Length: 302
Ligand SMILES: O=C(O)C(=O)C[C@]1(C(=O)O)C=C[C@@H](O)C=C1
Image (cartoon, rainbow, N blue to C red; front, side, top):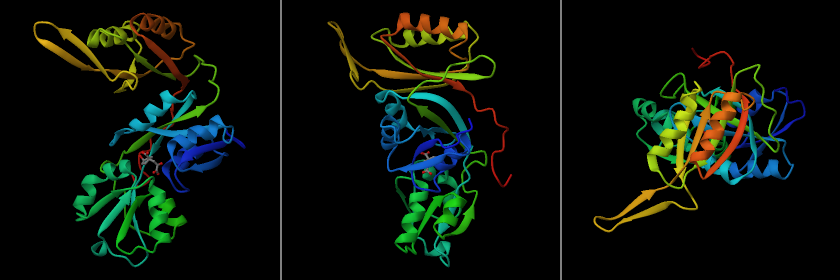
């Protein structure tokens, strides 16, 4: 994980949390800003970058669904994860007071993570979503907006010459975002340290009983699941089941994403997946990678 000279694509502008995640994952990397998540994927596919860093879930805001869909649409491999404590600040131009504000702008996840605190601060003003937290700070600065505040990092305040009106405004002090790192090639899985594996699967029929069977393949082998997520099955979102007597049932179809705590080099994981394959019509391993085991330090102010 020592990324000397490694080029790492992230979504956002300098000061975004994704840039900090790139620095945590690959301390000496060159971080490459991208407009959109999809551009970060393309940067790796086109050899403009060696890795992409992508937020997938936050402890308060939940999953970043767009990135689950992109993981499936592209063929990159997950080669690592980092969990980054996210400490949000309310930023405005120097001299602006809270009472002057008519609008707070930020990434939708950041707005969701600070929802209750904004209300407690008396900021019942318009909340508007933009592409990234640091981009919101830059926008206020470059347009000299005296009625607007941004939710972003303390580093964004420094970079875009804004003052911090309030710090630690996330609704929970242990607010953490989990990012995955993507590469063109998978890494070779090992068993000498804790590994996680991420898979995605779909099934043709069988409804919840298939899900139950898949999950038991892990449970019987004492493999813990750390995450399960479902997304619409884009190719076949609805399955119709006709019953001459009662009518037509319309079932929503899903792609299921599962993270489990084992390496693909572990024979238990290999056997579990062999069994899962029997129940599913589609199965892909998104990656088998070392777990982030860095010590817990939730917030800079704690
Ligand atoms: O906008 C940023 O700064 C980002 O890095 C994006 C993002 C996200 O997508 O969730 C990352 C971490 C925080 O949870 C808030 C926003």
